[in-house]
Image 1 (tube, one colour):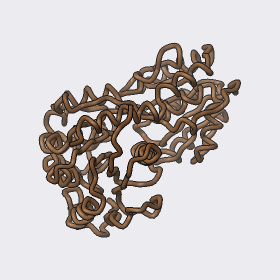
Image 2 (cartoon, rainbow, N blue to C red):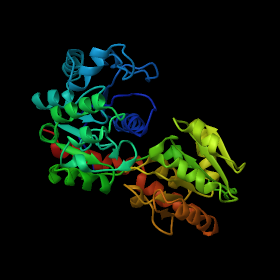
Image 3 (cartoon, rainbow, N blue to C red):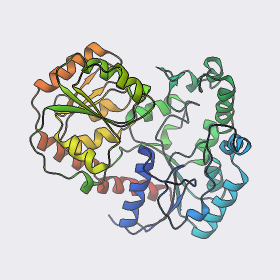
Image 4 (cartoon, rainbow, N blue to C red):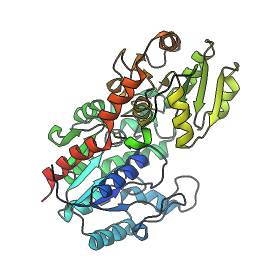
Amino acid sequence: MNFPKYKIILANKYYYARGGDCIYTINLEKILKDYGHEVAVFSMEHPENFSNAYQKYFPAEVIYNGKKNLLRSSIRPFGTPEVKQKFNALLNNFNPDIVHLNNIHTQLSPIIAKIAYERNIPVVWTIHDYKLLCPRYDCLRKGQEPCELCFGNRSNILKYKCMKNSFVASIAAYMEAMVWNRKRLEKYTSTFICPSRFMAEKMKIGGVDKSKIFVLNNFIETEKCRTTVTEKEDYYCYIGRLSHEKGVETLVKAAQELPYKLKIIGAGPLTDHLKTITQRPNIEFLGYKNWDEIKEISRKARFLVIPSEWYENNPFSVIESLCLGTPVLGSDIGGIPELINIPKNGMLFDPRNTEDLTSKIKKMFEATFNYQEIAHESLEKFNSDNYYYNLLNIYKSISH
């Protein structure tokens, strides 16, 4: 199908490969341009940003720690004059047909959704986390246990001091949630794209108009993941941030009870702690790796394990692993189960359950998988051409 050539502004708080939202934004910019659309980016200044023709419109970087620029950082979530001025200037210069938002809270602010709406520009919003439902964004009470209390009453963040275990920080998050409440954001947004059915259901539970919700899985650059699927080597791997919500400590505890080799790629606040509690030589911490190194390790692994203890949305690590022909052992939480077809491309275990994880790791090593078939089917499902077709249908449905 031939689509009109649109002028699109992609907005995300960061414009470098910091996390899944950033990678999505950067990859989406590329495929839209490859198909002949004009694309401008609106982001925050940052020393690691990629170069961009529209970076003069980026508002200054704001850092949320310490006392430096305390006033600017405290008012930024509500929409500062600088953000308003620069976004309006970009709209005047670029004259977009569509504004496509990603992670914009706090560092950019939903003020840009309001500005676009008031200028009669359709707004699409890809939802990467739970910020519209949970002032903390991750549905973890005090960063520990899954919680949905704020779906119905945002003041629970004050009761449990969920932000940094601080009443002051929790007040700030509560105020931001009150200013940018569901009704306002729903009014400004034509379509919310949820990368998982799980996310879509939580949005509906939170009261978001279901007619504005569209489920569309994340995508990968097909050529990036295309590879020769070879025989697997005798190890399994974890790829991601080393932090509490990712369940890596549960994984390390399970791995120490087993003889199999585990390769851990990534860094984070738990790095030193995990190394301290690791008593067995079969667990190898590899630290940060670039994509070519990750690709090589992942494609040769017997399987990837994703032991998350929070509501993962539609994790790229799982999608990329499957596209490389590597099956996945995933935590049965959030959107992870939607990606795993038991027993064809992986298995599931109970989150936080070390005993179940240990048992399933054994079963994954004993199981037989058709790696070539896993790669072929996953590349067909998650390729960028399919994503583009579905996204442009959304654009077409809301454009004037």
